[in-house]
Length: 103
Image (cartoon, rainbow, N blue to C red; front, side):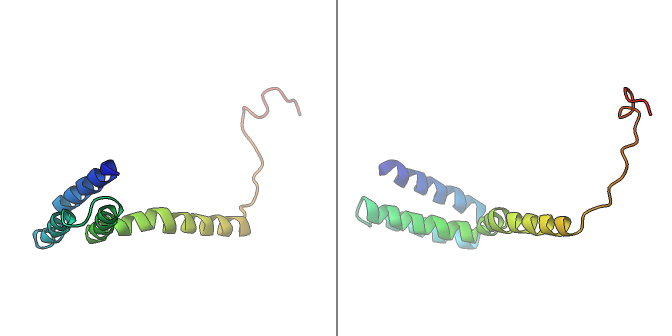
């Protein structure tokens, strides 16, 4: 439990460095108030909520959303379009294809 608390505190500290100066105070306040929350699950929940909000403030959440949700959806849509409109087959004409075959 303490390792997770330590990890989330480190994430908030790192997120604070990525924020503009006006928003850094918010993550520092979350870390400072975490000491007043009872140890264990309540403190872990407090820090987890602060970490999620820190990710939203750093715009990392938007990048992660695009990569994990919109990327596969757009890839599937492209695959569906390609399956619906196949390319015309071309005859295989190359030297390697007829090397051992005599016509």
